[in-house]
Image (cartoon, rainbow, N blue to C red):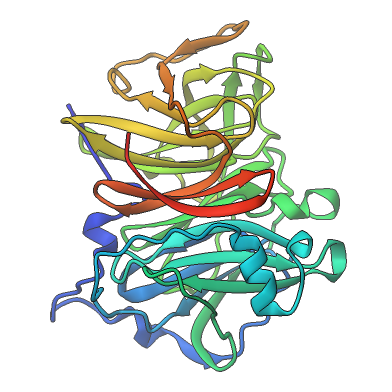
Length: 358
């Protein structure tokens, strides 16, 4: 029997309405200035705590946003040309703005964007907030309550940008995907929060049907938590595009974990963002990707599937539908039980929109 876990690894964890008996996690944070080398993957934990992945520094930051007020409206953001508006706010131009990720604070409904202003080594990392009404502001990182977890065995050199590819908060742990310098470079870490130190993580092996071989060097690009029976599980997507299930209980430091490939979604494709949601009593993955449109993947049978272990020419396993009229989606995140916030790329630039979950 399947039991859903919402997309931000959430509603029980990220509803943010801690009871009086719950620990105040912000007490574990100290006032510091957070100096980012890069701003990559984002995820929210409880009590308005934002986790920021800094791949260049190989560090996870936890930052208290102080954004814990319930929304005063039911507005949902819609901003055409958001890259241009961010550029104007930062004194730059749209072609110098790159939006790397987004995360929605489930308490307030405020959307947070990780942004690079400029190109290459001279790019400046910025965190931008978008209110429900579509108002932009820069989140200050000077003297904020924060903590950090440096990753000591992260990939270096050309692999450093993939040291952190995705992250999420789940039941007192920050789950981090990326590349390490270990023999099985593809690594998943379950780092306890409040932070003490980042652990070595578990090396991950999968069978890639499009390539017809087992692989340990390609990182998880994006993942979402999903409960199968009583077991917390990661549904993880890789380049070209295998979808794999991995039990969270196996993510122990130094372990070598073998994921089960439950779908091949077509090669020559890069997964960009994914959430898990429920519609009409059934569970789905909604995945943005580089070349196959917005995918709605059916999770029927994911608990029973044995896995793909032989070469696949095109697609196999779990099936998906392409959502019509939703091309160009590059990032998405759960907004509420019925909607998702999406970043859409078009010829005129980037738009931030809220769509109904299909």
